Each structure stands twice: as C-alpha cells, then as structure tokens.
Amino acid sequence: MYKTIELKKEGRLARLTLNRPESMNAMDDVMMKELGDAFEELKSDETVQVVLVNGAGRAFSAGGDVKKMADPNNPLDIEKVMVDVSRIAKGLYSLPQVTIAAVHGAAAGLGYSLALGCDYIVAEENSKLAMNFIGIGLVPDGGGHFFLKERVGIPQAKQLIWSGKVMNGSEALEKGLIDEVVPDGQAAAFGDALATKLLASPIASMIATKNILHEQKFAELESILEMESIAQVAMRKTDDHLEGIQAFVGKRKPVFKGK
Image (tube, rainbow, N blue to C red; front, side):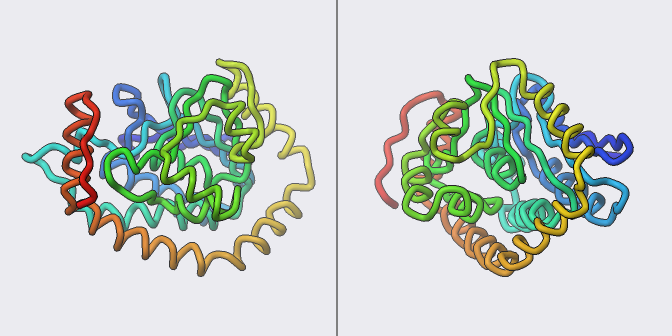
C-alpha cells in the first residue's frame, strides 16, 4: 500500500517505519503524503493503542530531501508539500494512541519535528538530533516551533532553532528534548519494551489524559502550522536558501547575506 513507509499492526501495537534507507529516510513529497495518510488511517483505528515510530537502515530520518529541493528538472511544489507537512503534524498530535519515537542515527529537520511530536522519545547515545533548517535558510516546519517550545519553552526553542545545534542523546536528554537515552543499537529494543509496558498499563486512561491535554493546544498547533507554511514558502524564494542548498549539495560552507 505504501512505497516509502511501512505500517504494520500487531494487535494493539502499530509499527510505523520510515523506509527510504538508501537516503537516510529523507522525506520526499511521496513520503510526506504517505505519512499524512498513515496518521489518518491510525486515527480511525480504535483497535491500536500504541504507535512505535522508527527508521529503517542507519538513521531515523535526515529530514526533508535537500537533493530533491535542489533538482531544477523536478522542482518540489512547496505549497503542495507544506499541505502534507501540516497533515503529518496535525495527524500525529491528534492520534488517539500513545506514540513512541525510537531514534538512532540522525533525526534532523523535519525528521526531528516528527520525533518531537511523539509522546515518548528514546534516542541512542550517538544519535544526532538537530532542528537544523537554519543551515539551508529555512524555518522549522512540521510543527517544529510548536513541539520544541512545548518541550523546552520559547527562549530555549529560539536558541536551538537559530543555532541549528546538533546534539547527541545525552545532550538532548539534559535539555529535556528526549525522555530516555540508551546505548547505541538499543533504541529499537527499548522502544519495544516500553510499548509492551504501556500495553500492560491502564492505557485507556493514559489516552484520555493525552486527549485532554492535546485538545486544548490543537488550535495553537494549527495556527503555528499555517504561519510555518507561509514563512517556508517565502524562505524558499530567498537568495540565502538557494545558497544553502547549493552549499549542501556541493559539500561546502554556505555564504549567507541575509537576503
């Protein structure tokens, strides 16, 4: 059914795997649409109570597919893409299940927004977590502004966004950006164990609490997503963004001019 992700249901547990391992699960327009579709499918499935999100291969997700952004022969329709990016964030935040992100390798940009949108985040010690849109002259999307400030407050959210700082598991845990740090190679096993523990808990009451807390914030998330979309469309037209993606593809340091 899906080309770039896998959604497997095992009783009350659903496993959602980002599955473009050849590109470190970078999200192209197909994956973004499929993630939005998958969350809508899960939202209507009352049999599932826990959703475990992970990435195939050597990373959780390197974020948006920058090489595709730089392809002049097949340009991304940014306005269409932003619709699916917003669907992902709203779908994930409103899921009637407890969500776990099991992070190994990179969780960057939109991949990090996806992880931050989950209820529990476990990351391996040497994973690389970064809200690094700034490196290509963009703003966080996928609810990145919302999820970051919910975790750490506005002042620290600004610093993390503006610096694009890359953190390992311990640094992210210290800042309150994840919930558990585990040795390399252990995120998947920890995620499975946590899912098993949750399913042996009175999880219906946990899901009710999630709904109460998230319902109050949903309108704010929608507003932030709309502002992110407007800003991202504008940033895509800047000289700094063009320089950022050309430098990324060319593996050189960008020279930004604030335009």
